[in-house]
Length: 218
Image 1 (cartoon, rainbow, N blue to C red):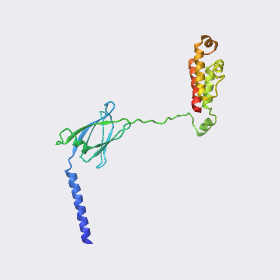
Image 2: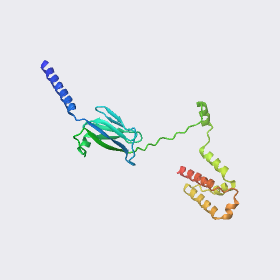
Image 3: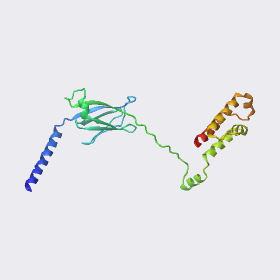
Image 4: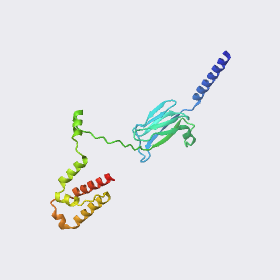
């Protein structure tokens, strides 16, 4: 039993000594460089450059410049808000490095891809208490009705009647029907003059309103 423990202890000491020796012999480089946008080449400030094992950190300055000590076995991570994280293997880089690796300084330019972030729309309502929100929800108008009321206030009754009378029930024919009446109205000058209010913007909203209802039914 004692001999087994002695063997295990000796093996552990050997592995520890080997690991320490290897760490001591690993060449340390001072790696400096720039972090740039791939699309424009502009510098990326405040990029975090980190090494997991051992833990080392650096932050690029306002010009995108960074510098930190590395060894060949390091894998660096470049992270910055608005950009996709990037992994960088120092060992792989040294294999293709065109500079002088006999010195203690190496240089690198890192290009990072922008990460498109779409945030959900946030609507802020001017309600001070939960009771105000509850009452607003209970008294909320139908959005379609609100749009119809707005159209009615901007388009004359004669014009509304002209567009809405005889409206087909088939979804595929409704938009075509309104567009034909719109073209007919503006192709006949006397018809345009017969209406009390001819507002092209309001008519456009009316057509969009009808086409929106058609698309909703589909």
